[in-house]
Every structure is written in C-alpha cells, then in structure tokens.
Image 1: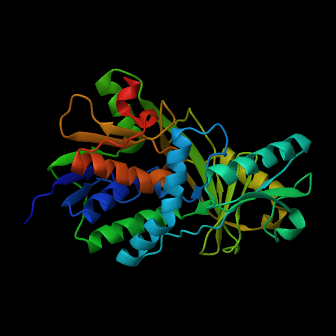
Image 2: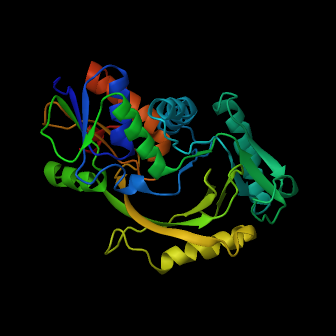
Image 3: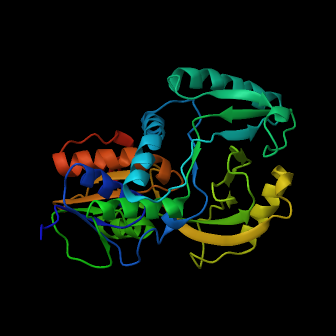
Length: 346
C-alpha cells in the first residue's frame, strides 16, 4: 500500500478542500478526523457565499473575488467526481436600500464593482416590484442586486467533497499516524492549540446559531438585511443565520437568540411567516486574530502546515485556499497573501 505523502488533520471545509487540491495533483493523501466529516462549524446550514463590498480594495478582497469566481467550476468537478450535490448555485443576493445615504453608497459601490469585478458579475439597483415574492421590504422601494453571491449547503458540500475524495482513493479516517507533510485544519480548537503552543493569541472561536425552515424558494436570490442571511436552498428549505457570540457556555446549544433570528427574518421577509422550523443549529466558527484565513507553515515544526480561520467566509474562500496550500505543501511555492500568513501574527 502506498504511504501517504500528505496527512490532513480535520475534515471540515478547509481540510477537505486542501485534500482535494492535493489529490488532484497526484499526491497520496489521507484525511484524519475523529469526529467525522463536517462535524464542526463546517456542518452548518446557512451557506451564504457573499463577497466583501467592492470598496477599499485590498489583497483579502481580491483573494476572495478570485475564489468566488473559481467556485462554480470547483463544485461542479466535485459533484461530477463523487456523485453528490453540494447545493451550489450562483443565485445572487438582494439587499434593501434604507434611505438616501444608502442609495448614494449603493451607486458608488456599483461603479466600483464594475471596475473591480472585471465584468464577471454586477452590482445594481432594482425595484422591489421586479424582484419577485422572495424580496425583502425596502423603505426606498429599491434593492441592491449582485450576481457574484452564491449559495451552498455546507453540510452537503462537505459530504460531496468526502465522496469525491473517496472516488479518488482518499479516505477520511478517525485515527491514523502522521505520514508525509501534515496540514492542520482543526477549526477553533486548533486556533486555541496554536495560541498555547506559540505563546501568542492566534485566534479563538465565535459561536453562531441558525435555523432551517421548510419553504420552497429554490430559484430565488438570497437576502441580506441588517446583518442577517436568508438563504434558499435547492431542497425546498430556507436557512437563516446567524448570531455571533464571543462568550458562550455550550458550543452546540440553541437558545432564545436563535428564536430571535426567526422574528427578524419574518419582519424582513413576511412571506416566511408560518413556515415550519425543521432544524435549529449551533456551532463554533474559527476566527483568527487577523480575521482573515490563517495559512502557512507551522513555525518551528518542520513539515507541518496550518489552514484555519475560515470564520464566516470559509466556504467562499475554500477553492483558492486549497490551491495556495497545495502550492506550498507539494511544490514549496509560497503564494499566500501577506495578510493571511500565520507568521505575521507572531
């Protein structure tokens, strides 16, 4: 039996995506996670792949744009290889315009998007009346519509990646010794381990709660209003999320904050009134101190690497994160942006 050249520790979105990129380049890979596929924050339900606003452009936003543009091909190949749907669709997003100041800002961002998004997506204003039944209320009667935003079903996307890896002979196992290069993609617990090991605050976890409703709107754009994501999925459900809790006692318990999400969603989108709640979910997302993905070699530990800190944008960043980590691990070619580097926090 061929010995692995790469061991991935963690079967969340970063671990599975890096494993996929390495396997596609011909590496022998194993993925190790005692809790299984998508057991942490990557096993969630919301799946809003939304871009940063097109202003104050920086390497993080440029990296995210490239990753979002890669996503359609990335997920199509995963689905074709493994035979499972990831729930991906470049379905767009609607946001209400609250007032005259918001309108002015939206117009400015539209002009910047035209330049920065390279003609591959648009940011425009549309009347509420033309946006269909799954459109939020807007005081100005106008909505921002962007066509760069996509959706994915996080839990199913992890399962689709695991199936694609299995089809290539890469197995997710509960336990195995390190073989070859080791990539640590172990979520918020991994950030705490890095903090302890390196003696510097590297990152921690932020709890999020979300809900899943039975409501068929699979062809509709998702809605973003007052910090709330409302995401229609292809299976006749709508996800609502999420909270951001820096302090918590139980990482997987839901409470009144979760119920408040539903109230806010119905206020923004009355068509959801009376929809059945299918699931309440909570998990802890890994947030690096830099708020950007945390990538690179593990300082002082030869042959070990870190891919962590996806926080709220992990699924959107995953296609590009996978490529730069495969560059580093397999080819010793460092293409990681400066703001994403682990050594920058030391």
